[in-house]
Length: 468
Image (cartoon, rainbow, N blue to C red):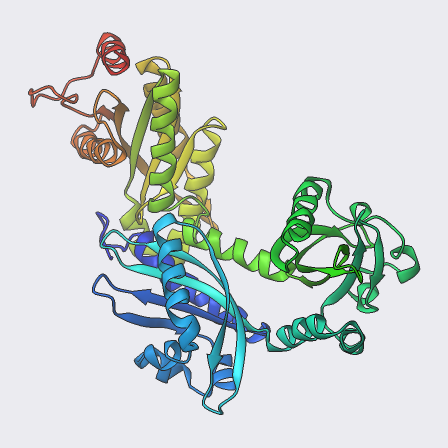
């Protein structure tokens, strides 16, 4: 999905995946599990575009083997779990939601491993799905859970040496037991924990969800899993934990308490946040990339319809950037682009959005545009700001900018139309050395091909038509 900008550089939509892989390669040696990026083409073919080296230790296959043939790893998924894993992954891609699952894998040695995996799907325009995620061996944890169900006495023997926190709760939420590693993981002495209500340690915003989770366990009389919450460390910071819980019964088969296993997932949460940010932002400037900008624009259009306010899209293309890049090198060009991004941010209001969609191309959403002059004034402010000389690595650099403007609903009814019309208007601006802001033409539904600035009456009438 590689496209070219006006100066021949690739857009961030193609750079995002390669930049993401660089970050994945850098962090993978320090993680206990494995990182992967799996691609599924519209014809149903799977390919691993990245798999970390720990795969060989866990599954007995090399990175190269998995990259050459994805089925070597996929077919290790237990036959009873395989279809569920595939169906869940595709369903999450359809809804755009993160995927989490636990499943078995049959490795070459004949051993059955339990794997817990998380990933985030991205669906490309041609229907290709790319999952980027993290998996970990939870076989030991599963054995603990089995021991928990078999007998409390046997379970206690495992508890003392477990990596996860084992706990017991009374029906009213009092912690009646926590394993010794609570102190190692969260810092509190056990005497300061046992006998206290769990609410004293859980983030206030997460307490209602924890109560609801325990109620589900009580009503169903079965084990439940998947509750995630923040828990306070002794030093004051918040850690993320993920917990399973099961009911315990008295001699009359009545639920009288709970027992559970909690795992620290703080590092996983931080990693997923970083991966999500990298997937939706330009790695050089930190601005939203094309996909993220389009999402913002769609949201702005929905909001404008509700509030009966116009939205302006500004398409910016830097003038004389290519000569600077060619003369001084890409490193200087990258530093210059970062300064440009910062200057554009300073010209905008808090509700406005700026994204980078090409080498030297930026797009802006101006929300709640009451008058046409608002968009024009912002464009003029940006032009003036970006024309001020830049000092980069001891060099004084000069660039300019050409800006095209498109208005919703005057010039287009959706994000794609607005960006296209603003882009075309920007090219018209480049032909006019004394006019750096040009409105899109013709307005939606108008047959004229003459470049002309729309009037406030045109905009008011279009807003009224759309609300009528």
